[in-house]
Image 1 (cartoon, rainbow, N blue to C red):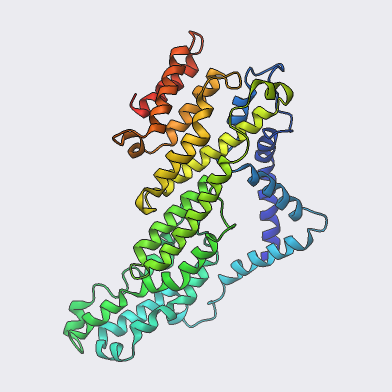
Image 2: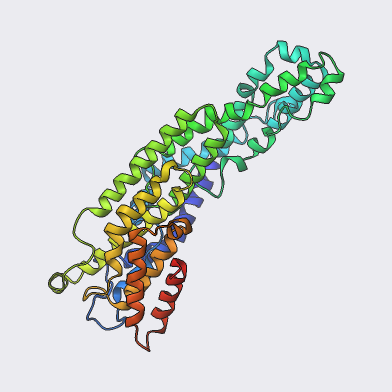
Length: 401
């Protein structure tokens, strides 16, 4: 049954995530990562960079807390709620099993309306079927949206079955309608039928997008969620030409969340700590590395949002504030940052910048400063630092230096 299936699925996912959780948590401060001066890797901060994912460190804590709740003794109330939600999605597949064949599937209902339009276009028009079609199709659309994740860029709503089945609704019938009852009336009806998908997007997809992009519902620190947010905003803009205000409201919410995250990234202690601080608190290096990772994820998120945000907002925020204020100091070789680590960071930063940001004329001061810092690091590389030199050559190639 649905409950047993959900229990097995939750257990499988929890077991599959154990190894990843251990690897991520092992890289966090206080988790046993070797510090400077210990035996083993000459640069523990490089280990930290390699062990972190593209998600925020908070995702690790969230995963651990959720897993503990689900796997607690007796499975607990949270798990039963989870089972009920999954059970509703599974049970929804059986919702129309007892419906008559002409009305049991979206494809069948569309075929009925298509046939009516072709045979009796005037009656189709007088019954205002085109205006009622979105409400007729809505139950099947709602059914499929139950399991849809709005911020999953790999599965946009344009890839769902309902969209592909309704995308051509009302198209291709003009000639057939002209030969039947009402003649030219079929063409007028088809024009309104073309609004079926936009109306469904407005009434069903747009509310789901508002919930997914609500404050606190997503994190700009997550590159995956930012990619999904960019894809969702672009798709909504394409499908809601008459609702610019609704799309602008979503854009404003996304901008506010990103600006708040950038402000947090710029707050706090400087990204490069004095040698005295490192001597008194060796784990300060790991904290600084975590801050660098968060700022770099924000830079990648801004690059993803650049195409859907008008007016160069993402470019200005990325270069003027994030790159200049939080990331550039992290590629200067100091007692706190070894040349190898600076080279590794510089390569990651160059890879996160969009080509138009790099190729702009005149060159942005922050991009020019990054190139100068990397050039200085290349001049300091020794003969035995081939890996760091290769990273620098790659980064400088991306910057056109």
